[in-house]
Image (cartoon, rainbow over all chains, first blue to last red; front, side, top):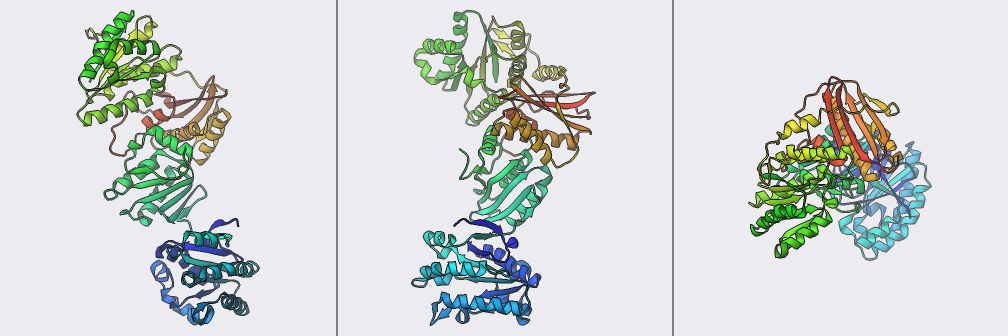
Length: 291
Length: 303
C-alpha cells in the first residue's frame, strides 16, 4: 500500500493512521497532541486503555493538565481492555471493532462533530497469534474508519515490542503514517523533531532570517549530551551562517558527541566538501544520499 | 617558510635548481611534492633516480585547477605537518599559457598569498618560471617571491601591497543587458529562486548552482547588514562564464586582499569571503566612491 506521512494536527476524519513510536517521548508528543487537540476543539476522544485520565501520554508532561474533568462530562472516554477488546483474556479483534463502531454511534448521538479513536495494542502483538490477528483485522478497521465522515484514528505500537517483519507488515495496512507536528514551518523552512534517530529534520531553505528560530529549536528540543542527527534529505539550501551555527553548537556538546548530517543532497554535500569539513568541527557526514 | 623563484631557460638550469631542492627534502624526511608539466615531471623523475620514490609527482593541470582550492589544500597539508613537527616541500610550476588574463591575475595573486598563508608552517616552496613566458608574468614572479635560487630578491613587494594594487584595478562595467534586481528584503528566498533559474539557463550544474546560491546569499546578506542601500544584484554571461555581482552604496574599507588568505582552522567562525572564493572560480572585490562591488564568476557551459 502507498502511504504518506502526516503531522498529527493534519489528521482528518476518515484517516486511519499508524504510529510506531520509538520511545515514551515520541508517543507523548504525538498522542498527547491528538488527544489534547480533540479536547480543545470539542471533539470526542475515545481511548482504549487501562490507564486513568491523568496518566494518558503527554497530558501532564506536555500540557500540564489532568483531563479527568473531560472524562467526567463524557467528552473523553477511556475504555478498559477488558470492556473493549478482550475475550477470556485474549485479544479479540471482532470485539474491538464492535466497540469502536458503537462508540462512533454514541458520539454521533451526543452531537459531536468528530470522534478521535486511539489504542496502543503493543501488548496484543505479544500474545500467541497476536500479530496475525491484528493483521487480519486492520483492513476491516481501515474500512470502518475510512468510510466514516466523523472518525479519525491512531493505531499505536511500541517499536521495541515488534520484529522488523511485523512492523513492515502492519505499516502496509495503513495509508497514513502519523508524525509529530513541525516545530516550525513558515513555508520556506520546516523543522520537525525526529526520534529515530534523535534529532531534527530540515526541509526547504535555511538562511540568515531563520537562524534565530533554528538555534532556538536546537536549544529547546535537542539534548546536548547525545549524538544528534539532522536529516537534510529535503533541505534545498543551507547558508554558510547556518553551517557555522551548527559547528558552534556542536563544539559546545560534551566530548565525543556531535551533529551528524544525514541524507545530504549530493549538491549540498559537494559544496561542504569544497569548503572543507575541517572548517566545521563537530559536524560529520551521516548516512544516505550523496554519491 | 621559504618561497623562492627558479628562473630558467634551459633544461640544465631547471634541473640544477629543482633537483637539489627536491633531494634535500627527500633526504631530510620531508613531505615532498612536485607539480609541473609532463615534460618537466619526467625530467625530474629521471634526474632524481632513487630519490624519486620520496616525491609525490602531480600533473600541473590537476594541481593548479582553482587558485583558492589549491591554496586551501596545500595550506591545510602544511599546517597539519607543522603540527606534527614536519615540513612540506613543494616544487610548483603553475600553468600560465592558455589562461585568460583574469585567470592569470588570480594565479599571480595566489603567488603573493603564499607568502602570507604559509607563514609559520615552515614550508619550503620553489616556483620554476620559464624565462620565455610573457614579461608581465615574469614581472609578477619577481614581485611575489622574497628570494630567488640565487639569493635575496630586490624586486619583492610586500604581499598585502601587491594584492591591494590588484584589487584597485577598475572592473569593466556590467553590460547594459545584465539582469538586474534590487535587493531590499532580508529574506533572500526569492533572490535565490531568481539566481538559480538564471544559472540553470546558463547551463550550470546542480553543485555549481548550490555553490552560487551560497555565495550570493553570503554576499547579499553582508551587503544588507553592513552596506548601504541600494543593494543591487546583476547577472550576465560572457563566453564561458556566468557573472554575478552584488553592489551596494557603502564605502567599505577592507584590508587588501580581503578573504584571500585561508583562515585558521580549529574553531568555527565566519569566513565568508574566503568561502565565496572557494565556491566560485574568480571573485573580485572593489570598493571606492562608486560603492562596494563583489563580482563572482563561475564557468558556464552555455552562453
